[in-house]
Length: 429
Image (cartoon, rainbow, N blue to C red; front, side):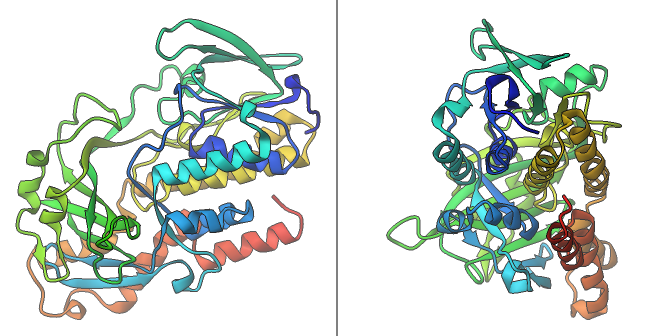
């Protein structure tokens, strides 16, 4: 794809992690682009997020590793425990697990701002346009036209022309709805989650991610996302509590406040020598509530010069710390095909062919709880009771196999990353 005029720009709809990563990759490839964000101002919102090695590999290639390391916690291990605090299994993470790249646990807002700052510094502040909510796209012989409204007033804003448009606006994507109007609302998984961040002393290694218990009565994920947040040396620690719940909340808004009383009874006695889980949740700076939702994989993403990426393309249940990673991978592959192919529609079809099948596998696999297969197996085999020795419940070989299975599905096992390196070295996308 060539050209630098306004009509030759790639219109990126959505200024989140996916949109800004795509902007950085396109700028690096010499392809003009502009990001359109619905919010009036891009702010550092949210709670914790994880960047697995296949994601940090992509961001390191953009020269962002040092900036991210400065604001993140470099994760050392993922450890599994039952709800009685008994150790089950541990996997070393990132470089501690033999990868060439680290695993970062980071505040979503810190990641977002790092991407925004880098894009503005490299491409220019005028390349980010806020307060523009996409109302739909059209294609003609000369390219695409995106239509916008003001997010607060609904007033129509000037339409923008480009060579291509990429919907990166998340699970409620207007572009996805335009092409699949009968799809219906996001699919509820039967699990509700409460999320929060708490300032607390480091636990275990100070860089551990822990998965505790099963959905009956609760499963909790905990990991630090900022070091030394005060004079006492405390960390900002992210936690997520998942509980089976037949009826989802009426609102599906990531900023919906959550109530401690709605979930704390399920974990009230989770006081372990290495961490008091209940106390951690009670001391939260903020609690948010959201149902676990996804959508069935689509038959296609690309329609002529328009395509989807990130959660707009493949919204998945937030399991396995993989949603952001798949969006980051989308951005890299899409930019590479646009760089290599002057036929925009052909490049978008090639991108879809490369990314739709693997992301569909992750969407469907996440419904089966593969990241937590270890916890489920121990729960079922012990009847939710303490064990004498984990070897009596599940062998070390079986534990390793369950862990490696999801790494392969998600695309961050050593073999998959090595194969991608070989493809890049030989000139492939």
